[in-house]
Length: 449
Image (tube, rainbow, N blue to C red; front, side):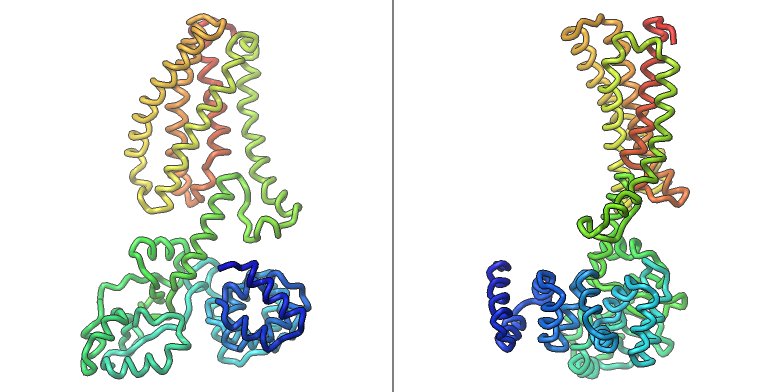
C-alpha cells in the first residue's frame, strides 16, 4: 500500500472540509493505517478526524495508537467521552492504556464508567505488573459441560463480534474449572447433537495469573499457540492471552534485553520521544559501575608499569580486544540459549566444557597466526612473539569461560542474564588479559614488575 499517496488524498479531503468523503475514505482503510495517519495530524485536526470514525472502528483505532497519540486525544476530549472509547475497547487493550496513565488520571476516568466495568478494570489493574493477569482478556468463547455442538454454534453466531478470538473454545465445569479446549474447526465439522466435551482436548497448556509475561510468551512460542488460557490457583479459567499481545511482550522483552546488554537501564519510551536527561540517567549507573570496575585494570598496569617501556605495550590493545570479543561471543550464545529455554543452570558444566574446547581450537589458531605475525612482520624477537601469543591463548580460554558462565550464574541468583553482557564481561576480561600478559612476561622475559 502506498501510504504517502493515500495520506495525500486524505489530507486533500481534510483541507477541503469534505467530511463525508473523508469518513468514507477512512472506513476503507485498516485500523492500523488509520492510526498511522492520525499520528501525522496536529492536535486540533486529530480529534476532528477521530470523531468522524464509527464507534466500533474508533475503539480499534485507539488501541493501535501509541501512548503519545492516545494522550493527545484524551487531552482534547472530556473524561466522559474518553471513557466511552475505552468502554468499547477489549479489556486487555484498555488495561494496557490505563496502566500508562498517572494514578490520578486513571481514578478520574474510571469515575465516568459504570460500576461493573470499573470493577473489572480495577481487578485487572491489581494484578502484578508484567504478569499474565495484566495482559489477558476476558473476551473469549466458553461453554459448560453438557452444551451441544448446535447450541455452541448458536452462541458463537450471537456473541462472536464481541470476542477477541473464537479460534479456540474453552470447556468448563460448574466450578469454572478448565477441563479442555475445542478448536473451532472441529466444532464446525461435528454433528449438532454431540456434546462439546466429546470433542475437547484435555491436554491443556495454560498459565497462571501471576506468571511473568515472559514465561507466557515462551510457552506460546514453545507450543505454537494462537492463544493461551489463564487460570487462577484453583485452575478456574479467568482469561486468555492472545498472540497479538504476545508479539508486544516479545518486542518489549527483547528491547529490554538489548538495553541491558548495552549497560543501560530499561526504558518503555521510544528513542526519539525520550528526553536527553532520561537517556543520560538510564546510562549513568552502569557506566559508573563499569568505570569503577575498570580501576582493577589500572591497578594491574600500575603494578607492572616497569614493563610498559617494552614491546608489550603495543600488543595490549590487540590482546584486550580479542579477549573482549571472545567473551562477548560466548555470552551472546548463553543469553540466547537461556531466553529460548535451550539451556538451564544445570547445564553449566556441559556448556563450560564445550566453550573450553572451542577456546582451545580458536586459541591455537589465533596464537599461531599472531606468533608468526610478530616474528616476521615486526622488529620484535621470537621471545616477545611467544609471550604475547601464549597470553592470547590463555586469554581466549578465560574469556570464553567467563562469557558462558556469568549469564547462568546471574540467572541462578535471580538477576537478568542480559546484565552479564558485553560491557561487564569486557571489563573483566581486560583485567584478566593484562594480568596474564604481564605474569607470563615476568617469567619468560625476566622483566621486573
